Image 1 (cartoon, helix red, strand yellow):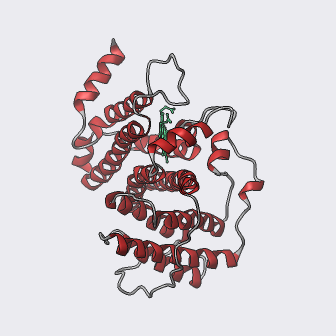
Image 2 (spheres, rainbow, N blue to C red):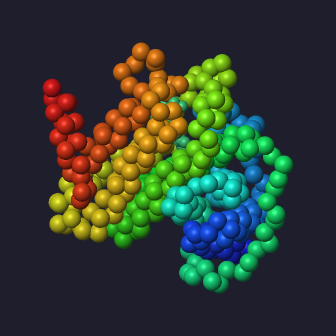
Image 3 (spheres, helix red, strand yellow):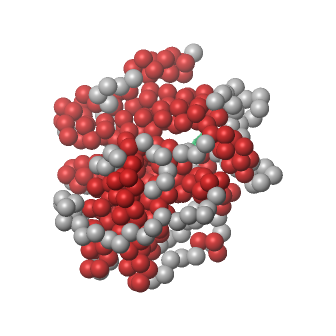
Length: 347
Ligand code: HEM
């Protein structure tokens, strides 16, 4: 616990976030988002009163990708981790007031944000949102060019993605630890939390990409390739995502059983693991269609011009490998792809 004031602000932020996606009409939705941004801003202020934020610009980046996306790595106290997570959430909520994200993705992204607020502050999730007292909502800002909003959005969406990657890695590692110690109730809870984050991955990815594809191709893409940066950037370089993949490998080393075997001895665990793995496959699937919308059949900036694949083909391969690996672990496995991948491996 970070003190009663932070606890109260965190509960309120979590409650406001829970209500955002229930509004279908744009005006109400925008107001709900501004309410959530204002609540997050007050939580940031309460956390900053305990200790100021670390100045990330003064810290060395671990990679060109981190430098580009304004991401840094370092051990943080609980208060600092909560503060930096909330800063990301606050900026993202402000941007979402104007970003034309679909209602379904908005629901997934704010659910991930709500889970981060709970995990980072240790606040117990509130019940019912009708008890939330209103917060003062500032008027939306004006006078910023659309191009700078889109460029900022590309970074903001990536930062939410990193936040979700790291929080998901922690949730999966916790679940694995609980399974190793035989605490299945705690493991089920953390697998559920991890699923909220993994469902948020494609929502954050789509948030980042809620910009005109022409602008992405004409301006943003070039800024991620030499001579603007020393090496071409690729999603593969995201270290938070690698942390998540390592946590998933460890989880599956502890519960490698097929869906049927696991369901026979621990049905709730089979369902919880299956739900998480399905979310991971769908993330891969949505990455394919997102890249197609942005760059059509081009090779990515990180691929060799003479290589066998373009961006979409590489992402599709990633989806197929993941679906093949999980086919026997989930209820509705893609056995067609699993058989094809196995045959290719043996040919
Ligand atoms: C907010 C998060 C992300 C967004 C918005 C995003 C978006 C995109 C886009 C637009 C492309 C096409 C690139 C181009 O040619 O211009 C792409 C390609 C690709 N992305 Fe992502 N991506 C994200 C995260 C990740 C992560 C975490 C991975 C980790 C494996 C990843 C792996 C790839 C790969 C392998 C390609 C194709 C080849 C390459 O560029 O290396 N992406 N992504």
